Image (cartoon, rainbow, N blue to C red; front, side, top):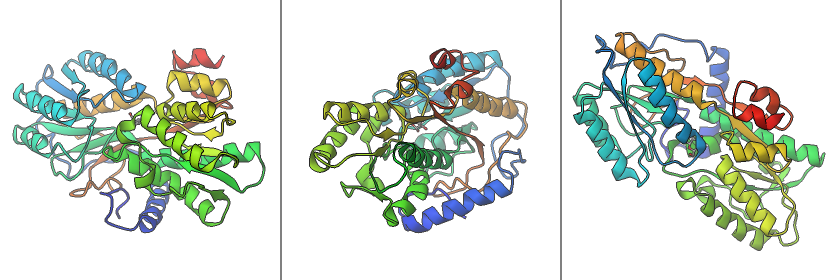
Length: 371
Ligand code: BGC
């Protein structure tokens, strides 16, 4: 079954239905347990403990990427490896060059958080030809055979939680619909953006179809909702335009925002239009958004603790070093257009003001904001 593939191979309705079935199947088969990753390549024989491990991160489009840099450097060193952690702030070609350099330097594992997971095929092939193992981190690497594993938070579930939070938040303010909502998605070059949107729409589309939700702009497709580069200014501009065209008199009850950076941009736009702040979702538990949630402005975010994701990726590296198969708990969901990539998925957690204290109890930075 195809849960998340390359966009455009099935109608979104079919894909959404398939996704829901896949989620249900995963739940039934106990997603979260470790299975052996029979058939996954890249671990034969292990490698020297002090080997170079490359980590190619994208741009700093959200706090989670910034946190990942330090966590990878410290965690890989503590595990005995030599880390080479790079950002690609100027874009795809910089990331391509960085991966090539990691291969030349003899990296045994290359962990990639791709800017555009479809544009690294040549470099990933170089990596595999040189005997390295390739791990996709947070974002899937698409249209390539040359990826061995994927480690991420469950992206579809993130979207589902966002969609449900939007409904719950609006219901708490006004018991019955109809509600006016607008929809935002992430950057179309990021493989996660469509998955987040599809997850959210699996919850919201039935409510649009039955008239509970109205999207006054009419912009309901992923293509219409995208935010290039995950840039706050792009989301803010689009919200400004939508407000001016559709909401001079009509109320805006809710906005689906795929992450915190965009949520704050949307809230800024609404405030400068002089409108009351609608229910706005988010993701990443960024400091400014957690403050906003505690102040009663942004409605929700998602906790995807970066420490756990990096730890899981480093655990994969340690297993490979020892010549063992890394833990995976999903062998079906992530078809990248060429192959189904053995995956380890972590569970995301929805956070609102109501559960923030509990959700961040173990986070030294965020727990201080929820006192
Ligand atoms: C990550 C999100 C993040 C976004 C922008 C996505 O791939 O999964 O957590 O908000 O990138 O940086």
